[in-house]
Image (tube, rainbow, N blue to C red):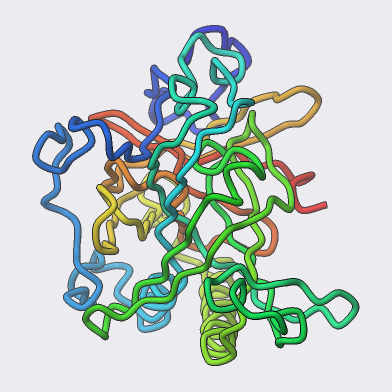
Length: 332
């Protein structure tokens, strides 16, 4: 495990913990080593959204609800561009000797790219928030326009604090429409954990059509994962096909190298636990393919209850990848 992390343990005993160094997978556009051409990781198991089919899932997981869930998940995945690095970025990862991403360019303009997942869209009748899109900022009556709040999960090392959030853009690409996209300008932090590397962002949009479409997709997405979770908990063949542990499916939708959204499918290697201050936290280690730009991407572990636990991609090396840490307190 990472240096200084003697409190790390593994809950599964079939394989030992294999993550030896704390890393990240954001893209720094000023760093040529972040490009796909210079990437040392394989790219053969990525699938474009429009080319994703049931056959890409392992045979024992070829279920319609899961296939639909992946497509819904893709429709909620965003690319995050951070144009400024906060002066407050940590120097080291929590409880390690590893340099924290973005520390070297803190307090200056930058262009870091990561991924995230839209978790909710709603209107607040008690407080009208202003949309930060160019059209609203240029109109005197922008405060009277109808707006919606958009909540997005990502990794803390992608958007560290509000100074970075204000200079960030979240881009939702429409995979079925070439060139189609929606841009959310600016974000604030609802909450974050630097040690667990998970955060929740809040954006505001004035686009009613986008808000309604996202709301519809979120409801469908929630219906699907609930259906899968119910069947998973009632599955009497868990011991036989080992779906619960070492063969448990992992799906990630991200923007590798800051490009188009891609789907990667893999399996759980281990679940690890860590004591962070007074909290008992845990994360997943998996072999689903990721690259620079995948930081903050949604991670779905088959049978997961998304209302009880939230994981996004945090980092990895050439062998394995891992999610952010999660504590039950994070939902409180």
